[in-house]
Structure formats: structure tokens, C-alpha cells
Image (cartoon, rainbow, N blue to C red; front, top):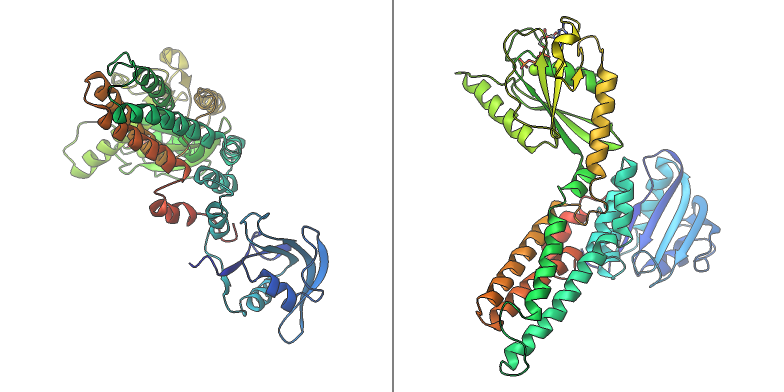
Length: 443
Ligand SMILES: Nc1nc2c(ncn2[C@@H]2O[C@H](COP(=O)(O)OP(=O)(O)OP(=O)(O)O)[C@@H](O)[C@H]2O)c(=O)[nH]1
Ligand SMILES: [Mg+2]
């Protein structure tokens, strides 16, 4: 993937459509303008009606051309956008003409944004924000992606990096001139106080309950309960389709079956699980193990109880607010028998489902709103920040144990590197492929 190649791609959606946007970036843009635009490259940043012609001078299509010369473009390179008629034949012909020049090729997924990153137009968290914005399905996801794209996350990481650098400078002075200054090399030093403050900030960010990741990837809601409580019937009711098998035989569900739904303005994954009971059946036992794991990982857990089951319901493994007690089969037994329930429903005939959904939506919205502006939106950020915190803790311990400023400096350097890694300043080669390959082509 040589940066000197010129790349082109269809940047708009599926064809046919009203207008197709072709995007071209790289050093061959001027050559393309001269060869294939009947009136040559238009003036910078002014949409101009023009004819696209092939090598033989035949008309490919007529449309608007928009030229943004380097460095003031998305990628930082010469960029040309062509707004053509959105027909498959038009686009195929246009791309064929463009790629007929040497060093002009079709772009890889995310390659335009990767070039923008390499040109310093965006940092890595901002580039991730671009990808998230394109994938955003809920307003909450869109809001979070826009905040990330406009630098909301990177500002915090860059501030931590700067503060750590200031701290490192302070510590390095003490490494070089151990006898100078009146700063004691112990727990009362200003360095120790600063490390402690930073640690508290990073700990607070890490202790956000994973809300940023949940907004991006979806909240998790598990349905658990005894066999035959009606878990699969409830899942199907919430899904509005027959996603899981329902039978009168206890022990029907073994695998975890998930559906996706928007509730309370958030994407939510709802999981149906195997009924919990003692069993000698190896397959069922594995299903039950997975059910417990799913419930443990969930943000909310519907604990479903069969109102008509004379057996005492099992004790609730999850207290409120995570655990929600729902009594099912209200069509069989009078709801009075289920006084301790948070919700009473009949999954089979739909009674009470609206109220349950509204209650779930309220709880999800409350969870999502519990952290104002999470600085972690991906596992990648969390991993690096966790490593950064470990390095800070080690720096703090070294200060407290008077282990020498060399060790403290080394820990601070490690912490700085993690912050820089999050915003993509260093050590990013291994993650770039993973980040950008998930983009769509043309972005
Ligand atoms: N009358 C009545 N029957 C219900 C209701 N919900 C589920 N059932 C019935 O209860 C039986 C078990 O339903 P499932 O949804 O398969 O129960 P489950 O909890 O998924 O069971 P397992 O997968 O075996 O753990 C089926 O015969 C359902 O038709 C309800 O609200 N009212
Ligand atoms: Mg089931």
C-alpha cells in the first residue's frame, strides 16, 4: 500500500442511486483532471459541471467535479470528487477509466481516512470516531462518535500525556542531579502528589462501568430462570419474531440466543438462556454454564418466574438494580399471587409486555446517562489505559519505597507511551490495519 499511489473509490451508497460520489486522492489527481475532465481540473473548492471522458475522448458521464488541492483536503493530498449519475454502468466505466492510469488503483477499506491520519489531519481516536459515526444507528451512538471525532476523547488523553511529560521532566532532573533541590525523594514529594492525582483521574475513567463501550456496541440484557419459565417465549415477544425454539418440554434452550433491539434510545442485546436446574445431561450442563456466564456479563438481568409453578422460585442471584424480577404466565394465575414482582407479564398473549419494555428502556437510559462523557469507547482504549494505570501505580510505589528516580522515570515513560498509543502518536502500526480495515471502502 504505497502512499504514492493515487486511490479512487465509490464513496456513496449502493447503486443504483440518484447521485454517485467518486473520490480520488493522490498525486495523479492533476493528471486525471487533464486527461479525463473535458474542461480540465476545475478551480479549487468550486463545484463545476464537467464531462468525464475516456482515453478515446468518448463521454463517460456528465457531472459535478470538486477539486481540493493538497494540503487542504480530507487526506491532505490532492483530492477530486466526482458527482455522477448513480448507475452501476456509469460508476463501473468511470472507475475503469480512472484506474487505467499507472499508479491509480481502487482504495482499500478506510484508506482515505488512513491517509488523513498519516497526514496528521486526524489522530487515531478521531479516525475511530469517523468509523463509529458511519456505523451509528442510535442518536446516542452518533453523539458519542461526533464527540470522539471532534477531539473530545483525545483532548483528555493528550492532557494526561502532557501532565506525565511535565512530571517526567521533574523526575529526570532528580535523576541527573540527585543532590540538588530541596525535594525529598519520598512520599511527600510533589511528584508523588501529581502521580496520585493522575491515578485518581485514570481510575475514575476506568471505573465508568463500560458505558462508552456499551453505547457503541450495545447494552447487554440476559433472561434467566428455571426451565419452562417462558424465557424463549419472552425473547420472541421482545424480538417480534420466532428467534428461539419454544416447547412445553423443560430444557429446550441450550445455546445462548441473542437478538438486537433499540430500547431507551440504546442498542441492546437481549439473550435467552438455558433454564437453570441441576442436571446430569452434559449438553444441558454446558448450556447452564453459558447461561450463568451471560447473566454475569449482562448489565441487566431479567429473572423470569413462572407464576403457575408451585415450586418456590429460586433465590435471585442478582439484586436490583441489575436484577429485575419478572413474573410470567399471568394468564394462568391471578397477578395477586405475584406481589413481589417488578413486572407481571404473559409472554404468550402479550399482556404487560408494553409496561415491561418501557421499564427496561427506562433502566437502560438511566445506565447510559450515568456517565456524562466517557473517555473510553473501545476495548483498545481500556487495555492501554489499564496498562497506563499499572505503570502509574508502579511509579507511585517506587516513590514511596525510595527505589530511585530512574525507576520512577521508566514507569512514567511507560505510562506516556500508553497515552500516546491511544491517540495513535506511537506504536500504532499493529493496530492501524485492524482499525482501518473495518471502515467501508471510500471512507
Ligand atoms: N399460558 C402461558 N404459557 C406460556 C407463557 N409463556 C410461555 N408459556 C409456555 O411455557 C412453555 C415453555 O416456554 P419456553 O418459552 O420454551 O420456556 P423456557 O423458559 O424458554 O424453557 P427452557 O428453554 O426449557 O428453559 C411453552 O409451552 C410455552 O408456550 C405464558 O405467558 N402463558
Ligand atoms: Mg427456552
